[in-house]
Length: 236
Image (cartoon, rainbow, N blue to C red; front, side, top):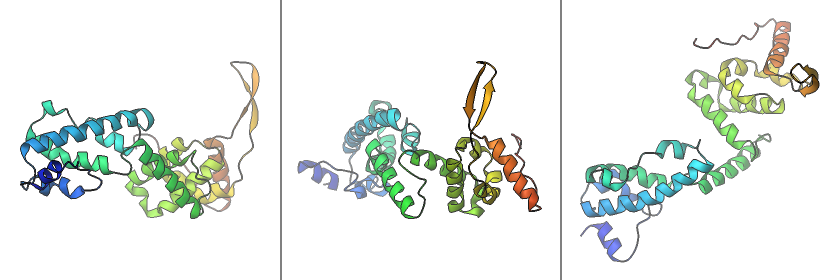
């Protein structure tokens, strides 16, 4: 008799978090699971996963768990037993993952904030940890930048946040701003300035822009005999 059948006949329900060995490709293809068990278990776990994905779609649509698993698990009537058997490992991993739920993702972020702050990254907090994660994902996606190391990229995020700079715009010119990090860190946050809004005819307060900081960085680089920073044109 299959191990999984013995468990279910004993009145217990398998849990991918506690018995991941039942959901490996080798276990699922070794005869421990009958076709009927495969279909029942796929349907049961898919119901759990579908509810989680619905919650993730609302609260964490940019999470890896949601992007990687949405649309991955069709309803049982639309797939064969062989397909269900092949999809069960991914389905089980999603349910077992600590970041496979909204609660799990938020707990991981809280732990990440504690760890980062313990290592001196005081500029990371609950309010910007998600943006920091996206920033570091974009950095890691650009293989050409890995020579500088993740800590340098994290320092760039901190310098940008301290100066109220557009982090998304920095991601588009990662290489340039990583090269400019020492000069950027040497520049105190530029003060806000007043300007006339031509549309409303009123004076408004605006913060220094990336262009303002680029000019200041280039002024410092020129004094050191270094070449000016130049943005890469899109498409190059």
